[in-house]
Amino acid sequence: MSDQRKLAAQFDQLAALMEITGANAFRVNAAKRVSRVLQEFEGNLRELAESPGGLEAMDGIGKGSAERIREWCKTGRLAERDRIAADVPDGLIGLLDISGLGPKTVGRLWREADVTDRATLRGAINDGRLASLPRMGAKTIANISDSLDFAEKAAERTPLGAALPLAERLCTELADVPGTDRIVWAGSLRRGCETIGDIDLLAISTDPASLVRAFTEQPGVTKVLAAGDTKASVRLDDRIQIDLRIVPDHGFGAAWLYFTGSKEHNVELRHRAQQRTLRLNEYGLFEDDGEQTPPQDRGVPPLAAECETDIYTALELPWRPPELRESRDDICDQPPELITIDCIRRDLHTHTTASDGHLSIRKMADEAIRRGYDALAITDHSRSSVQANGLDVERLIAHIEAIREIDAALPNLTLLAGSEVDIHADGSLDYDDEILALLDIVVASPHVALKQSPDAATARLVRAASHPLVHIIGHPTGRMIGRRPGLEPDMHAVCEAAAEHSTALEINANPKRLDLRDRHVRLALESDALISINTDAHQAAHFDFLQYGVLTGRRGGLTAETCINAWSLERLQAWLAR
Ligand code: DGT
Ligand code: CA
Ligand code: CA
Ligand code: ZN
Image: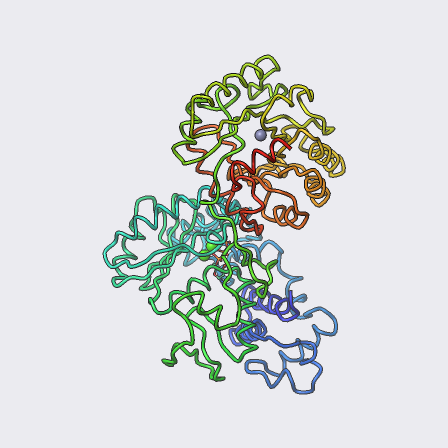
């Protein structure tokens, strides 16, 4: 983080602490203004602080504030903030994250009801202390209680696998509201992040009032947080927040770009604009004429605003897919041609009733045909996976025969007889080599001992990836999002071993897993390892998980060339038989 952003955060805290302790509004506002000025400032703060009168020359920074900034540059501390903070319980600042609780109220709760953190706030609500305060009505208390509940729940972000179908449904329904010309999602959801804080919708409408009404009155809304002319915000099923913004069609691209983020990407784009004496905001890209009042408020026409591509082009940058708009992505790099869902021709990790799947081999094959696949690998569990009804050698041999028989009867689908073989804690496999050699495809996955040390995990996965009969390492870390971290191997070493032995690493597309995760996909590509995107389907609907795997691959920079599921069948078969 830059100096000015760190210091801006300190001034924000100072302002909040002042308000909590009841400082006068003038001083609170001065601190807030300094924070804003610092956030906008693009130059070198330390240099400016050293040049005499440099800070004072900035709009919004007075003599006192300039002194404080110089003090911070010298000592790394904002003494005034530290002084006030010493008198205020730490937990109070955390209460400011609860919607509806501003610093003034928090200060009151502290002084008048001994509230010092979330737990004591909950206590004060329950024992009636809050209700006994003057000017504290039942409705206000119910609101605080409700927000507190939600803040506790919201610590859990919504999985991509829940947020994406929800957004798809909302957009389909709201597109039918008369006057709606376009409705899309932005934010972390458009970037394909594995978990979503809130869903950001963006619409063009000739009848915004109707759209806002339909949005706030839809079934499942448990709270309307805002309902204005161009912006509304609701909580759905007491679970996830959804923001809707209605924007003019001529500025749609600028708004979509801005609300897609990431914040860091926006900051970089704005910086790029400033270097070219341009000004970028959610309304468009404008000439920077040095005026304070924002250009859109003065009727200044933008240089670009209608579509994202125009804005990138005007900034002399290549358009970037949303999945590559994180802080780790360099805005100047030419993005690769990312894989799309249409590139995927087959699934190479699926289960049937032979182990813990819900459908027969034939039913799974029918589903693959229905989806236009050219091949399907049946990979039921191996003998150690007792809880998943894993196959002993005898059952496996019969299963292979059954798969081959059905395959012979299906001219348009190649069924591959496979297995998802357990990787034991030491990296050895659950079947002997003679047995593995009978299979068309071997997916080796870790299922137990997922808490072993990073060194042991590295050795385990490197050994499995180096095994000549293993084609794919399935869900390599075994993590479950929000539930268990899984193995933490030296992923670089695992990727190098996989690349050396031409073993593919799986992106398991189950939204509870997304394993490999985006960062690991990137490491794999840097090592020239192959990737396989599979759904691990246990029933027909699970094939739909593919989209989450593809998004994760795209966030890692994956192209069709490196993904074995996108290869021609001949190329795949040659690789399987290698
Ligand atoms: P989330 O909801 O936590 O999963 O993450 P996002 O990325 O969807 O973040 P959100 O919903 O707070 O805001 C949506 C986008 O709006 C964000 O990606 C970038 C833009 N945005 C919001 N607040 C700011 C800001 O303070 N500065 C900048 N530069 N962009 C912002
Ligand atoms: Ca969001
Ligand atoms: Ca949002
Ligand atoms: Zn598995």
